[in-house]
Amino acid sequence: MTTRVPPRPPHRRRRRGYTLLELLVVLILLGLSAAIVLPSLVTPHSDMTPLRELIAETQRVAAERGEVLYLHIDAGGTWQLGGAGALEGSLGHGRLPQSPGPLTLIVSPLGSCAPDVASAGTGTARALDPLGCDFAASDGAPLR
Image (cartoon, rainbow, N blue to C red; front, side):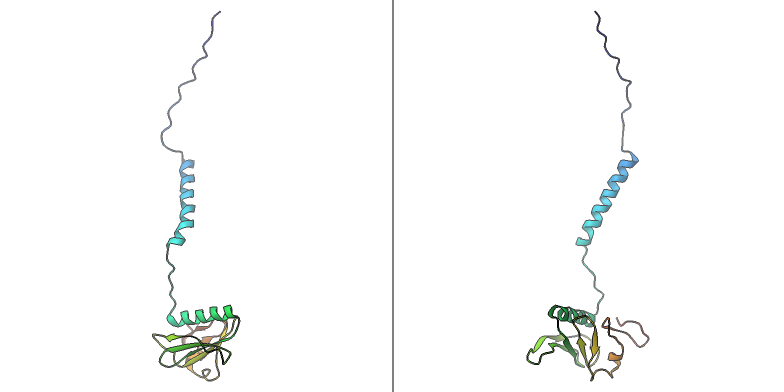
């Protein structure tokens, strides 16, 4: 009785390198991981002026408290934030590097704002967009 040895499979060529599909999968995974990680590493850049930052913060506080707030800015740039109640006092104060002129804004908890009666006739108050609380120059472009 003779035992037969199965024939050897044909010699396969050694594969060197990676296929195009493998490279594409790796590149897609690297792109997805970069898209997830990079936004947390980049610091946010704010192009808001100090006046816009102040109004945005006033809107945030008004919404948080759920009440109307008054933001008074005098001609020298000194500002004071107060609530509607006379007993409440000042919620904050500070100084802007550049004053828009004497102005008092009434900021609602919904985010809209309007100048008070005394400020309504000033040029700054006329340039105010009440829905976005954004100031526009006389040509209609937003102030920077």
